[in-house]
Image (cartoon, rainbow, N blue to C red; front, side, top):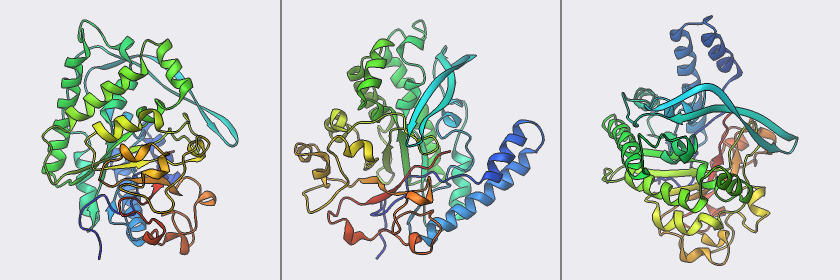
Length: 365
């Protein structure tokens, strides 16, 4: 019998590779060579195809593949008030098997109080809900991601002399969006967060200190932000999180196991489930995907000390399948690999602990 409430035993973290034709049309729209209606129609078609793919794979939680987004997080964050830019960009380096890849992001600062002037992803959710008979799942960046775009040095101290008011304003903006999503019928929400995984990387922690951000203080701030964001949420709204080390064309930005943050995220974050990247960079630090029989939430995959931290609610790892490149997907797991065999749902018998299971890896590009 299919599970009735998320998170599901086999789940999809959200993003799918966007068709080349859709990416090309978005560029044409930005250049004024295509209309908004043309782009919306192409996005609608891509979402319907992605929904069909997920349903045929046997998944119960269905996303829109983030087909409407140019950026998985900035499309949301930039619609909150307060962020400004002088047009400069910051270099970002990702690492992969074929070498480093380079990316840029805007150099942002927070110059006024954070508010949500209008709904952001509500219309996108309404379309997704109309396109599936299963559980529609909406993904959005965690509030922690907003802070990482600026850091304390780029938050105007005349606006926020201390960060307590910042936390309350940002959380209030998120709560307003969540309330509108709930009113539209959303019962499954996922907050995507690379910032917490970045705190597991010693080089990135050192870089943060150089920029005036203490990693432990940033972790504590993330806890405050997420707790305030999910304060008084409806009881029947499931909220999970997806943590990964960044993904740009199958390359990563950070590495290292979760031991640095495991106790905090498992005991202080009020999530119903955790989608945790389980890549080769984790295995290099002595952490591997769940195997064998273990108590509670398959916490044995986190090392000998993790079980005392793991909550008695379910989470999944996100390494069982990848939608980035079909060639590296397991034949029984990936929802986007080309063969019919690879579109079968994950076998629950291979995940012995009832509160763990596989999910796809993120596929943003």
